[in-house]
Image (cartoon, rainbow, N blue to C red):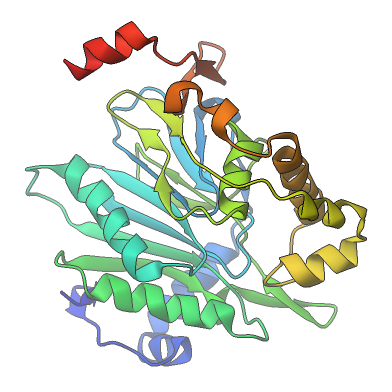
Length: 317
């Protein structure tokens, strides 16, 4: 089915400028969205999604109120929600495998929606900017085209992407909105910043850094974060980057070196150090089991011990 806009089908476009020129209200909506002051999200209610991750849940979830993600430069942040069931998914897409990732996002919401007939699927796209290599523009078009190929009728509500998420600061193009949150109780989508990005921030970054593809990180039926198991091979050569200056790291390890947030370089170095400390991932996943985190009474995420062989056998019976 094609995408819908104000209850009308929209045709596939060849550029984001064509989309915005044909549907001028999308421009106004984007201007209003990007003008909002980012909300600093309380970690006690947050489920944070990193690059090439997605998470979905429902309003009855007692562990999560806000799903959020940030540090999107050329990346796009995608929210899909069913207004009847309230099932909501947020994904952080970087263009690596858009056409296989969008069906995962849709399935995450349809599976939680179940037999609920009232309501509709609403889509919010935020991210990218007017970058020189047009990486953002290509991802914007790929996401729009991929959602148009889905069986479900999907209504485009927010489209703050590429040129509509662009500003020029001291002659340099950069995004206006780097991060968003979605309230899974109300459906509100808003610009956001996040003081914490756990659990297991370095482990999850290492998975992506070593080529891990889009993965779901949350089991809403158990209200727990599940990471891995994942694999990577030892690579001592990456130690080279720890000795490089910030400009070199930005130039070679970023798709948008002039637009990255201030903590980008330190984040990259922390990820590389984690990989050097853990040449393989085997020891991080005893028995080949994922790392599991549950919400504590204090609001943090606590790592639960892996099940014993006896417990694994009981689960399989």
